[in-house]
Length: 411
Image (cartoon, rainbow, N blue to C red; front, side):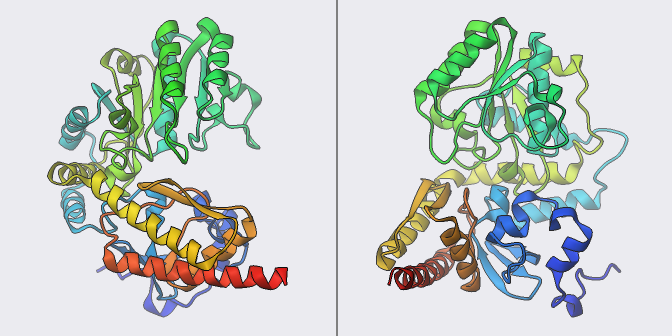
């Protein structure tokens, strides 16, 4: 029989030091690297976990933390939810891949078309970065054009990045515009002219956009024959089951979903109008494990959850309760330079002093709660009254210590 991982005798191991010795940066996910978590290269706060259930994680050192990050928004139901887990185990026990497509690829695609306003056809991949890159490829194939305008974060792939190792030509046909700036968007569309293939938007960045901005994108695409793409990785199955487009009633031509769609299992869905999505047959978008059944089973179970319960409404209420507790904790502490921003379903603490932010996150972790530096923290169905009390208690204590330290500095 396979042995449990890790070995119980190994829980006290220096996991961060071991990770940094073997993994460039210390973690394969940027937001899970120590400086991203705590603002320090070598924090004393936990960097590795051994189990997660509900809204709680057990660290490699054996401590239990209430998690407000929920795997960077990938989990909305709760870690190791029994219903999702049972579906996953069943799929895995039957063999997750073969040389044929699994029937779940068809079934889940059909259900997504019934749940997402723009969805008439579906292609599956494994990550948001892949999904948005595929959506852009489809738009370029559909239009026969190359120019893309974008606003948001679309992952690590070359088509839109200017990082080290990315040749200038890879993103030569991409132009970034500011979030919610309708004038800048209109100007960029005019510059692109008849070369415009797509406008790709992350529709929510710390707040809802103005309707004018999104409608400007819709008008520009309709006028030029370009494709409007929404990146709904964070908003899908959270703000609404069908994402921002369902909330706002503004339907894109193509959208990309993932994260909470499969409650943390690796799956992305590129969905859209049939005539646009048909261009996927005229280009090459393929991945060996795009339609393995384990992640599809998780997504199928999440769709069941959304059919029997209004998950976004519960996330909204729970998020509102979190925000109320945090605002009260800030007020009581009389700490300056910190506010609670964002939407209840995806919120953040904003600090005027980055050092205060890092200090707060470390103090809160000592108090038993994991907060995210920057955007976002996320409620889940698993955040019950007990978890909310622990969040409030850890936040109050961390803010109190910060306020005292601030007072000492001013004195």
